[in-house]
Amino acid sequence: MPMTITEKILAAHAGRETVSPGELIQVEVDLALANDITAPSAIGVFYDLGAPEVFDREKIALVPDHFVPNKDIASAQQVKVSREFAQRHRIKHFFELGETGIEHVILPEKGLVSPGDLVIGADSHTCTYGALGAFSKGVGSTDLGAILATGKTWLKVPATIKLVYEGRLPHWVGGKDLILYTLGLIGVAGAVYCSLEFTGEVIERLPMPQRFTMANMAVEAGAKNGIFEPDEITKAYMEGRSDRPGDFLRSDPEASYDQEIRIMVDDMEPQVALPHSPDHVRPISELDSVPLDQVFLGSCTNGRLEDLREAAGLLEGQEVAKGTRFIVIPGSQSIYKEAIKEGIIETFLDAGAVIGPPCCGPCLGGHMGVLAEGERALSTSNRNFVGRMGHPKSEVYLAGPAVAAASAIMGRIASPEEL
Image 1 (cartoon, rainbow, N blue to C red):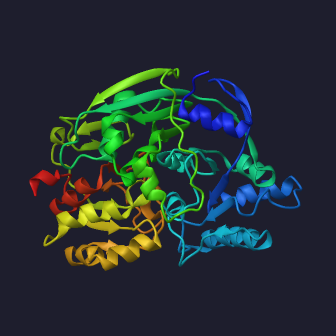
Image 2: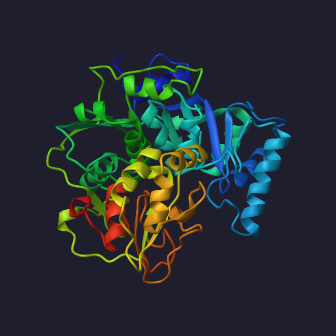
């Protein structure tokens, strides 16, 4: 029976020849992960189950990244719970300050996810790893606690929506613009409990960092997962990162899809999501002057080296507008270090930006950039719900790194073409 790449991965981890959309299956998990917010609750469930040991100390990753460095006593206690659990059960992949970063940046970076893997995380943006051709999805802490004990979980096989991107990307248009445009097209409920499969000639040329961005935001359409067929770009990314080559699976030509949506990109502009939803999207030329109090460049969506590099290229010799705060947070220690070597950090500092340590920071209104009442921000993160980055009467706009840099310079939402 012909299957999609998602169905093939699920079938393999369920020990079956085939699976079909709608089936309930039990699967073996290759990697389970949690962060400083979700891990303590999952650990509580684990102990409530009475499990003597975790299912596999090498298949669990605990990454404190939301409120680190600890912003208050409560966040310090959260990390302490995770640290003590990791020590007690000899968890191999516990990443704290000095080696940590944003979970969905550092796990691929450290080679902990390979094509064909099945990854479950207590964080909604676990779907990021679909960029590598893995099946990955978020769950609640209760489910994650059971997985810590058993290494297994129940899933319903999702139907797949095939997205075909055709044409050639214009200058300044990248993965963030593709996924924002797609969200504007299908809506935040357009792929509920479906798999989004990203395909087409545009995707075949898309660099890995931009694939991560697109897979990361699949959940904003309600999708169970987003996924790319692994290829030579994937292989090049994996080289030197992991001794597990993975399974380079492809969807069968005769595979059945719930929908097939074709998107022509030739005339696409940089896209901006307006408050208060990721699908409230407009091309940048349709926006009136929108003054900004803050611009944030970072997050698991756009905190990678290539994102910083693109923004720094626009900021060279420029200054951040007076009255606008520009916050830059590299996604990992290694990204931070390379950005220093390349002079990227110096460029940001010379322009008037402030650099934060690798973490989620202001993305979720956590710290290092919380918005006050009435303030307006442009962010390269993935969500702009009411109160997402601070006060419920603040506003958040979403865009890519080039728009973020141009907007920081202009003090308003601006296209890089204006520079």
